[in-house]
Image (cartoon, rainbow, N blue to C red; front, side):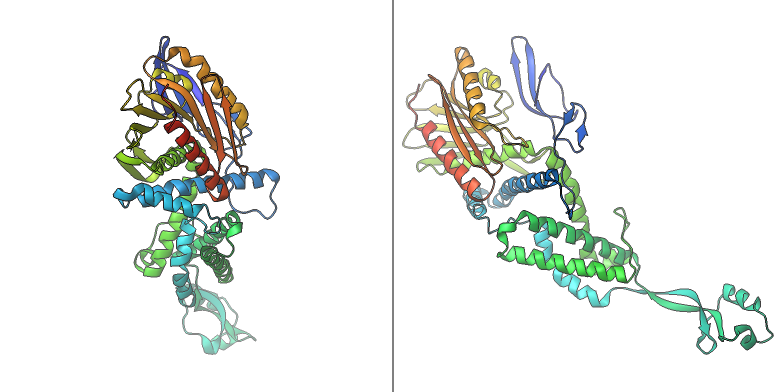
Length: 476
């Protein structure tokens, strides 16, 4: 991230997280993408892992680390994308999302993915295509026995007249063969080239998906993808034996690819896998934004589970068909407002505020909770929520202590609201952790958790504990 004095404007390879005005002028907090190459410029970024492509037989430690990072990114994506499915029932968005996340806590039930859908839908089509692969009869010139000659073209006739002899039999020589036109079956058609390209790509993507879910070997989805991958590998080898070449990415579909039901389904699946590979590049670069959205959803789910919490306002959420800068949805501010009926407090979950208050801007936290005590009145309380994402595990305790020091520094500036508490949500990279840094009047909790399995369950439990401690804390 960078802090820019003055207004940087839109574009330029960055995403604006927060904008604030101070005595010395406007300040923007911007996020830069992770590099797509080993050494990226503007700003210089060296030593970052690059998204792995394909499955290598012999992987270096860096390759293994990059593949593990990709697996964790895909888990975060899956949790955020489950919001899109939950939005199909607008009245029960959060209960449906909670059910989906509870399933994700069980690593034996792997996430849905494009290759899983294709394994379920396209395997029957591929099996049906196998015995009836389209072929064409193409004319070639070959030395053919006289009694089998059926057709000759101009080139064959010229060859014949150049041979010594007076009759055709004499010109055929001792072998009694002449150059003639014959028709041979040929499988190297545009539609079969697409079929070959798809089989190879589907096998590769299947291998990657299986490597990401080693603990799900006994699940139905794992078995489907494994069977699909084996079939695609054998199918691709059969096409190699038939001398079918591989289609280019930019191939223009012909009549068969557009009108034949089976070939059209294969063509569409091939384009989706190719597009998914391109989309993964952008998601890899902007996964810090996706982590923020995941953290916001985790906080909303934690608040929705309070016994007395009633969701009174839910921001309109617009789900995108494609992610933009790592973000799958847009929402107004706040994303959700809860009314605690018995306690008499209102809790707002705010993400990426357009005009953050002075204290929140100074914390550099672009997610927060705003707690208002309706019955007792007084200034509202603000809880800063930091969502740092990193390719390596953060020192959570050090981060909590530094954040706590920051809260102490800004206490003298609190005039319109109280901001004494904070929460750090960061990826655990396989090792769950929770800690607390206490000051005289401030407190920062840190939680490092995952997007699936035990790491997700432990993280959600810790966020629930933090939410209860903040919501029911005595008013300052």
